[in-house]
Length: 184
Image (cartoon, rainbow, N blue to C red; front, side, top):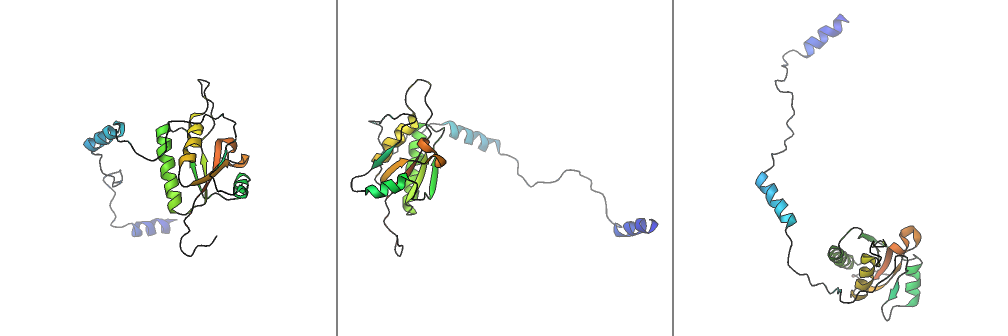
């Protein structure tokens, strides 16, 4: 054991103890002015109106358990049946739970624009189906049902199979322009 102590003393020769017992994380101090500005910006309401083509002038009221099914003129019934049966795999998913109507509209518009840009054929939109305390129909579900009928890239939609959200979600079939060299 004496040899171990001697080896350790030889090994640590010339090493000095640290004078400070706190590590430097390298994290800069918060700029309180910048933090205050960010808070003010987050609470400021914007008056800019975004024109996206999705109208609320007439919202189709639907029930919490109502199954939704719609197809644009010219879309083959076999395609819509395949969609309803979950036979067209969805490549993207969006959850609108807990959003305001305006936030849901903006998020849905951006999501569909991105799916279109990426040439995605089918997506899933989860709108929920919560019955409202005032006894009225589900707000987001009713708006999504109306908006999707207005969106130029939507060919059709149907309520999902139970494993994908049932009447609280939709499979949405989108138009594609077919990228060069891509076969279907």
